[in-house]
Image (tube, rainbow, N blue to C red; front, top):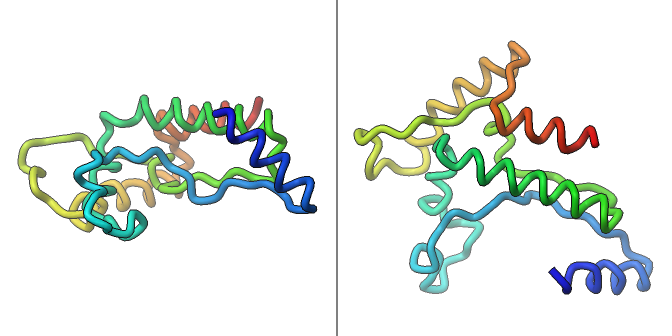
Length: 133
């Protein structure tokens, strides 16, 4: 964390703004992200993000990033996987081995319904509180 204020200072001293875009907490092991694979293209590593058992970690990450954004006076902070502000997927054994598309379909559909109804997940509520502070 000592690097972040330094990076912000360097950017600002060179006339640049500071922001964070498409941020989300990685939940992949080193093995899942090794082998020279482009992390941004590692769909299987991101597939498990849909599971509701990650919600407490997602909430803590968002709260931390919002506090950091205020502390460093970022121009903006933009989290990724915004559908998780509306719905998650509860784990069940039948989902073992399912790929990214299969694991995203159910929560994405439910997220769309919840968006239209104005219903937030617990992570969405935590983010709402964090950005209100």
